Amino acid sequence: MTSLTIETPHGPARAELHCAEEGFTVLLLGHGAGGGIAAKDLVAVTRAAQAAGVHVALVEQPYRVAGRRAPAPAKQLDAAWLAVADELAERFDDLPQVFGGRSSGARVACRTAAAGQAVAVLCLAFPEHPPGKPEKTRQAELDAVEVPTLVVQGATDPFGRPRPGPHHEVVVIAGTHSLDADLDGLSRVTSEWLARVLRPLA
Image 1 (cartoon, helix red, strand yellow):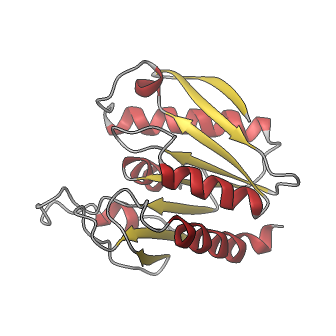
Image 2 (cartoon, rainbow, N blue to C red):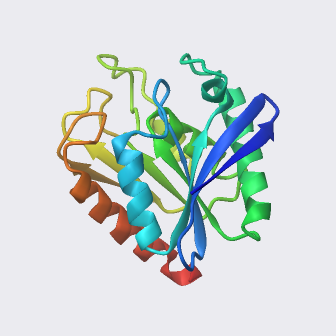
């Protein structure tokens, strides 16, 4: 594991690199709004991706690196994420990148996929709406993504369940928003999807 500090327009971010032996793609994973990169679902997906021949970068947003828990505004999160993606593209010789993350990090991945030229997007516990407020839907962020996208959602997630669409599939597994009730199932779903969507790139 290698840890990098990467300058962004909104302060330094951090990327924790977990490299595969012969990786042919890079998966960038962002954390939730109040959580970090040690979340159980992120750790499980990192291991599954490595085993599937994918390099993984766990990305800590600048506000977390600075020790704050309250998330930065969306535009700052997106700008910092794209700066990290640019730096990692250079480091990994422009290998194709998959953008991903859990909760807030999934939203960032969706919003930046086009600008960052991501080849696919992985959403863990996409927060379809704030708990108890289904009218405040974020479905449009997901629907705007035009590359293959996987959403893995807990069956009892209070943040709701996104609708599937032309470019994204939704897989429901046991658990809540934390996605830690069935880590084996999460790993399996993720591995199968990565193999399927990335096979043409290998």
